[in-house]
Length: 127
Image 1 (spheres, rainbow, N blue to C red):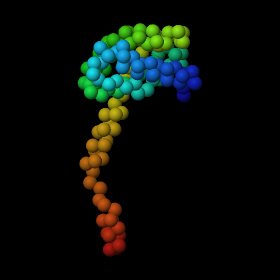
Image 2 (cartoon, rainbow, N blue to C red):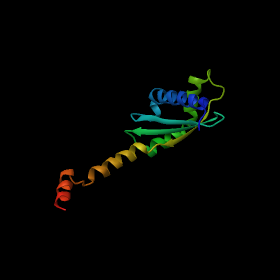
Image 3 (cartoon, rainbow, N blue to C red):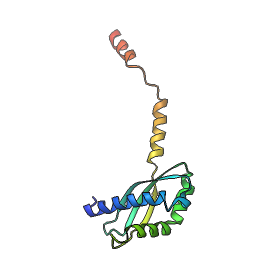
Image 4 (cartoon, rainbow, N blue to C red):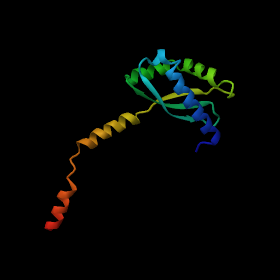
């Protein structure tokens, strides 16, 4: 269970990282759209676990590039929130696959053959 303080920092970092990926991080991500899905803070506020989702990108390649440049991203974050926090947290990135999973499930569900309800009522009446 996150404390109010952890939740406050999570929201702040989520918002700021989102803006960083839109502005300062453009050379890093190119045309890809990066969504900061969720941020979880450690109890000491020293580590931020950041879930990212990508559109219009090779997920693995972009994720690798972001991880290789997390020091630069942390510096951008420090420039933005340095005056309001004591410690700029270490950033640990995770690839959020929930959007891809949801799309996969939509495809699976759309391929299911579900009989019309009217067919079932006719069968019940015959018995």
